[in-house]
Image 1 (cartoon, rainbow, N blue to C red):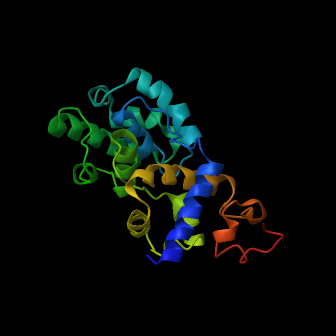
Image 2: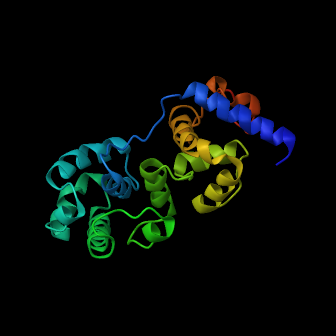
Length: 217
């Protein structure tokens, strides 16, 4: 990375820290297993909705062994509000079985083992590893993907490609904070429609700031 690019990245990270010092994982969880299930439920669903569903769910079924007491149909009924409930129930049931049969009921702490689980992709694995195991990962969701592109920090066409680009730029000890802060920025300011460029703390270093007209900002 060129010196001026390094300086720009440092300014972006510093401004994110100033704007969102308390940014953290919005999915309520008590352990790696609950975070894994909550992240699986969050596909095409808001964190608020997931928390409404997962709270009572985890209270009654705290571990993978408990989930296996449910049939897929019963689980699908309990998570209906999260959408895609039958697919998610099938994957969650298969994940719980794999955890019990192959990992002693524990969530494995490696990308390879997590992504080998049914329905678990790199983004979900990264969320679990970064938040529950302090792994040096920067998971990319739709907000991180959008903001990274607009800031010119990434050009990849897939979340995995963007994750590779960001992890090559951001120091390991700053990746989790950057992940949460980019999400917060995408939700509050750099929204998909009508981004609030006039109020954006990153505008001085954003190559996309002139793309959106004043009426959109």
